[in-house]
Each structure stands twice: as C-alpha cells, then as structure tokens.
Length: 381
Image (cartoon, rainbow, N blue to C red; front, side):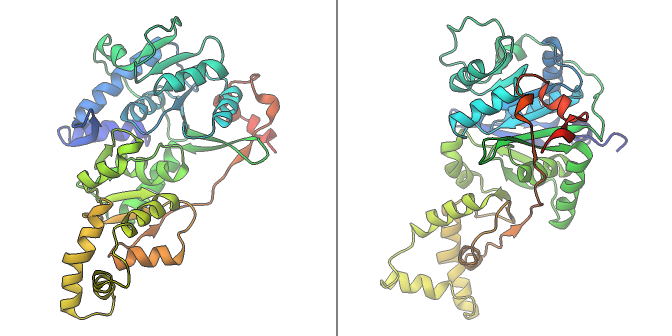
C-alpha cells in the first residue's frame, strides 16, 4: 500500500469489500451492523466535523470513554487529518483522570456522557471543544463548545478527501499516572502498529471471517497492536458491547473467534466458569473431573467435550473461540492449565512497554502530544 496508515487501510477495505460487515454494535438491546463502505462514509463526515471545529495536523483528540464505536471512528478521523488520538480510560481513579486532563490541557475531547463531560470541563482549558456521545443530562449545559455526536452527523453531508496522515506519524498516544504521580506517555506510529498487526494476522492466520469483541477501551498498547491494527489489516468484524456491564452477556451471544484480554479478563472468566462447577466430591463433580482428564480414552474425550467442555465454554462466550490472546502480565500456570483443560489454548502476545515520564512543568504550558513528539520528549526523565 502506497501510504501505510490506518485511514488508508480503511479505504482499502471500503474499496475491496464494501458490503462486508466492519463493525457491529449493540444499542438498546439490538445489534446494528455497519459495512466498510458505510464506515468510510461516516469517518469522512467526522473528518469534516473535526476540520470545522479547528482540528489541524499534529493536533490531539483526547477520548474519555468506555468501549464504543464512536471513539474508534473519531480516532480514525483525527488521524485522517494528520492528528493523534489519545484514549484515556474512564475507569481510572477520578484523581488520575483529572491529573491527566490537567497535564494534557486538551483543545479537543470526545466524552462518553455527562460524567466525562464534567471531568473534562473541570480539568481542561476554558475553550475546550467537546463532542459527546450520550445526551442524557446535558441539555441544560450552557457551553456552546459542547456538541452531540449524532446531531453533528445529521448536519454534515457525506464528503471525501485524501488522508493527510503519513506512515511515520504518531497515530496514538497513551497516557498514565505512575506511583510517583508523574504522567507517562507511550506513542505508536502508523507503520509500527500496522507492522505488528500484520505479524499477528500472519502468525495466527487471521482472515476476514473472524469475529472479535472490543470489550475494553483502546487505552492499552496491547489492544492497539493486537486488536485494532489486525482488524484493519485483515478486514474482519469488530463487535462492540452495549456497555461494560453487558460485555459477558454480549460475548455469549456473539461467540467471537478472537478475544484479546488481559490477565484480569481471563481470571474473571475463569471465576465465572468455576462458579458453574459442581462440588468436587459430589457425583457430578467427579464426573466433571473424569471428563476433563487430558489422558482419557477417545470416548471419554468425546463425551467430555459435548457434556462438559462445550457447555462451560458457552458460559464465557468461548463456544467458537479460535484465537484467545493474552495481553500484558502472564496468567498463573494454574489458570493456563484450567483453560487448556477446556480446550482453550491461551497465547501470550505482548511487547515491552516504552513509557516516557513527562516533566510536570509541561502541564498547561505546551501543547500536549504535538510538542512532546517534536523533540521535547527528550527532556523527560
């Protein structure tokens, strides 16, 4: 591909498989589908929307939201204009979110709902431009700089322009607060993400028929490398749960073939399965132990699969799982062996993080990501 960037891969799939499902998302209990062609059209609208509110090349769009498709599309739109997307995890402690916002002092923010809007207004510059997803509770807010995502789309015609992003540009910057209350940043170029995504696609033989669940925000390097990037490289379907509370039920309903989870994700799923197991010393418990023995006969393994393993895999939505990926710290051996007994072979995909500690004196005095990656980051400790 001539211009190896995330927006260009979106264009590629919109051209080569326009009608295939790119995204699936749940709203009010109903699943909705969006094709690659339709996705490109909406991102094109968002490009014009961001351009209209003053977003320019090398600017940063902060995303303070739980997993939702709007954040992903706005990220691509910001990158389309040559900018940077900076996802922040809203489940962080409120003090950490406030510290990150004060440090970044963002000019452009996507906020999920009223709580995230309030956090942004309390800890950002007075003229911050906020696009929000959920309108509940925000109708009486007087700020003219607040705009509703869906309403903006309704007022913006479809448009198309060539992406301004370049392969060597920063696509995403992640921020966190360390134990010493210092702000740290880790950044990822377009070509870097696509190279690692291509590696995963090749190694795990991922194709366009995969179904993946985006149950976490893209505020971790692993999810950028091993979920978002492979989605754009392979062109499979990415599914978004209705909200963080429904992710397990939505996973059971979908039965994804690809899951990228952290140690906490897999340990929580392990607990869900074990909660369904009978008491070990009971007749049913001894039957489960017998069925899960790895060295059993063919009949034992056959019955164990259909009577025990498959129902237990259904509990966590792993009925069709083909590529269970572990991102970040390793699972205990006992947990790995437990999943293996269910026929789920968890594979670890992760790289050493490259966090840079930023000077606290930069907090409200420099443009956050743009200046940090144009040379000033060398001043970090």
